Length: 147
Image (cartoon, rainbow, N blue to C red; front, side, top):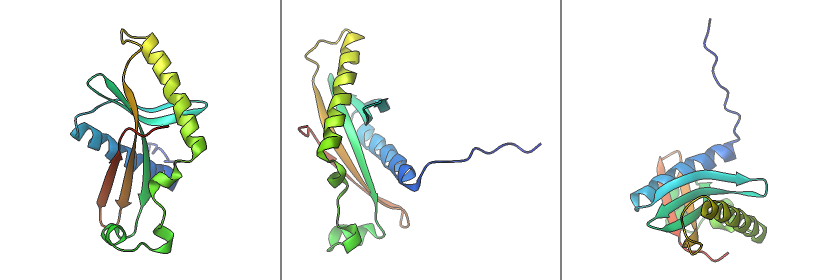
């Protein structure tokens, strides 16, 4: 009997996003943060990564885009199709949903632990540029964004 192979039903966009989130997690760990949770989801939204450094929680949204030639597109004038930046996908309605998910997490976090209600936290964005053909990445870490 032949072993059954599991079919990957993720869209290309979701696969790219997953690659970006994995890269972002490695980046955070390399910079001294501990990844506490990934893809914390409620019906009103999702936060990609929750990390901690000391007593501060970091809620991290990851935005990933692919580029044909990463070196060319980051150093020269971009092609028309490559003019948008990953962070351009953080629309006001998305930020509102993220804020709601963060507040939900904090209520549960504070209610289930000995952490005080003054727990420090911040919202960060990591943008990941992927050049899959040349196996290159570029990561930008935008810290402490006001939402």
